View 1: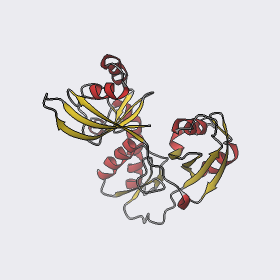
View 2 (view 1 turned 135 degrees about the horizontal axis):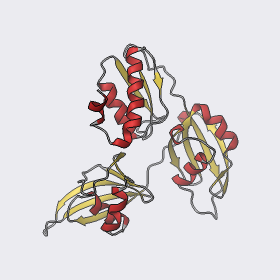
View 3 (view 1 turned 90 degrees about the horizontal axis):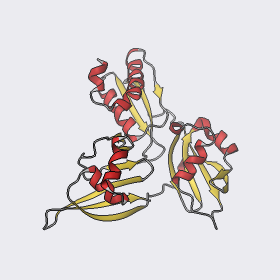
View 4 (view 1 turned 45 degrees about the vertical axis):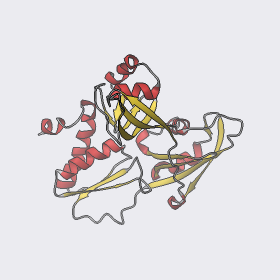
Length: 260
């Protein structure tokens, strides 16, 4: 039975698949309810697939606001009423005087949180503004962060727990790029976006340091499609915004959004 499930997933995902399958089985057979930590979009997709295989189980995903990337899940027997179930998500505003400093980015804030000994799956989406960040975290660790987070990079900061309704979502900034490529192969587009030779981009892909739509992708020849999000460890993320068609010379025109 396990092998039947495994064929749908990358070997690196098997440990998570096992955990998620156990949550689903306990909801179906032992009538238990499980509220997870924050899941990335690929993990949420895996949980959704496993829940959909079992008619006696329901799933609710929530990330603190509409359109959240990282979300918690409730997996429960199908007869449980989940609308009033608390989400357990807190909003912390982190603010500091960044004048005269390098602008703080997502990695700075996330690094500061992880530097407190907090695991990545306890942290949801981070919304970066000019002199502050709105951090969505699990409710259980909000007080700890509020007391202990006093520095981000080299900037001294103050923190405050706010009602979730005061969240100010940030729109991800993108640098748009218009490319003309021989094909939609992952290695070709990634090398153009990151301005690295194709031979150098192939190694991190084959080493498992690339994700397409949050799923590990080790095949450099994989074709990308409109809407795909590609993340390369150490290089950042980009999204295929539009595949615009062929040039007269038969090359493919592609519009890319590189997250900055």
